[in-house]
Amino acid sequence: HLDVRRIRESVRERRILLRIAPHLVHPIPFVIPTYGYGAQGKGPLLLALALYNLLAFDRNRGLKDPQRRIPWGRVISKGECLRLFPALERRGLTGGVIFYDGQMYNPPRLALSYLKSAVEAGAEAANYVQVTGFLRDRDRVIGIKARDLLTGDELAVRSRMTLNASGPWVEELLRHVDVPELRPPLPFSRDLYLVAGRPPSQKYALAVPSKHTDPNAIMSRGRRHLFIIPWRDHTLIGSSHVAHEGAAGDFAVTDKDIQELSDEVNECYPALQLTRDDISFYNAGLVPMGESNVGMTDLRLAQRFRIVDHESADGISGLVSVSGIRWTTSGDVAEKAVNLVFRKLGLKPPKATRAETRVYGGHIDNFGEFSRREIRMRPFGLSEEVMGHLLRNHGSAYPEILQVIEGTPELRETIGSSTVIKAEVVHAVRVEMAQKLGDVVFRRTDLGAAGHPGEPALQSCAALMAAELKWDEARVRRELEEVRDVFP
Image 1 (cartoon, rainbow, N blue to C red):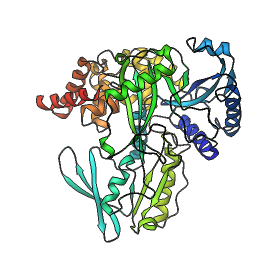
Image 2 (tube, rainbow, N blue to C red):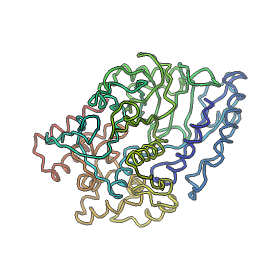
Image 3 (tube, rainbow, N blue to C red):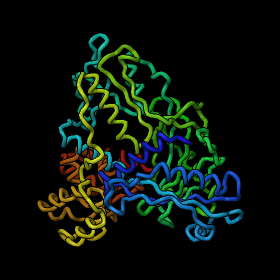
Image 4 (cartoon, rainbow, N blue to C red):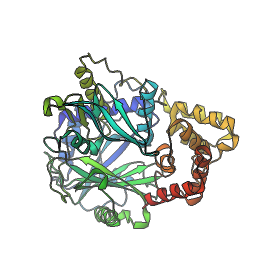
């Protein structure tokens, strides 16, 4: 894309994530096969790789953990390419390129780590509290109106500045202050990734050309890529992009959407032989896009975040809106938004320390050494698999789970055939504001991160939460039904 600014931002922010969340972010290699001597050949990729390596010269600055360092990208031969992926189409194959990026082990836990870090620093957080509008004093926003979704209680939160960081709901909230849409409007793409229950064949991710073009590309290889990515013991496949129309909460993924993406990846990489039965779960969401029409699949995706000072844009003071474009650069966007809030308050923004400040659970200098040391201890007789799971999800904060076991030793037991232990469920309720079964299954543990964990596992989890939150049988049934409905 020849977007030097975005590359530099992404390299810096990836480096920060690898440093501050070493248990949740790690490098992963990608293989891009090359064919012939034209757009799909080695020439364009070799040039792109050389430019990228040059622009990412400081990709590992300050990273002491060798397991978290990003290697140089390199060109590989046809033989090495086939050794890694023997089922590749051999006709015209000339080799490939390997480049490295970062992968999140558990995205919800990373989000929660940010949140817990904020609370530790003095922030107030509330779960299941929905903003319903803004408090106004003529042309000034002085806070928000909100509703407790679990009790129905209405409440008001007053503030000198309000930051609207509600993702795809940014514009919907702005209608409450008579701002019908951002200028220019903020359109969204519905992106979809499939989770295949089969284990990955390689530790390498594979990029294959899709059926769709990339309108943003300056040096185009003709088509956008589909990615087949190892993730834990599963395979991620995607993504598909479709322009979204309507309210943010109205998007849905149908069986047809899943089948179409499965058919496309099978067409692009027949060796995968993906079937509907292989799809154990999917991840989907709305991503800001550039100028594209509803129903289009060859979309221009957004290249820049947006921060709007509504006093200068709309004559409404006390309100700032922000919309990011990707996980990697979210920290940089947050810093810029918070700095603007400080300036609007007439204050000098403090020096940001986020590049050195570990997230909650991220106080680990060398994750490999940390893991080996802690696993050798085997507290409470926990298996190596369970210990590995705890360390990857909770990092240096995993002793909090052990404290729960100290009071009730039977909570060291695993749930179903997973490596999630009962103490994690109790900890999620007591410490992490888990209020519904879905909170624990999808957002506090990885019990349902890759598919249905089995009915016994859901029943066990629901029983633990019922004991903590005093649910009756009717509430347990409702919670179970809500979670079952999520799985495809």
